[in-house]
Image (cartoon, rainbow, N blue to C red; front, side, top):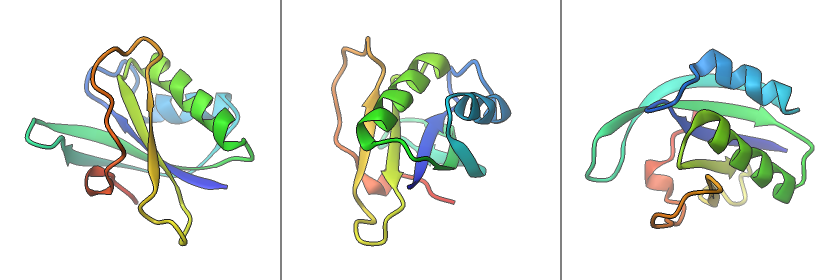
Length: 114
């Protein structure tokens, strides 16, 4: 299955190349990458690594992998979406395991694609 991930670069110890290396180490295939700027609602702008991946992981295993990427990249959350033409606006947000703030629903308005 193909997915797109949005991983913020703010406060992230890894750059886009290192993020791709980590994803490959965790067993997914990176098929495309781009760096874009996103505006976080009414807050500040942030650089985001937009990564297209391919994986045979189950959705629950993929969620755990992305949760692990939250820890590795020191991000509160990472948004992701299946690249499925039948549900183009359905996505998810995986949160860092120790995150205690407000949990948001996926919003395609803020999601970046390649």
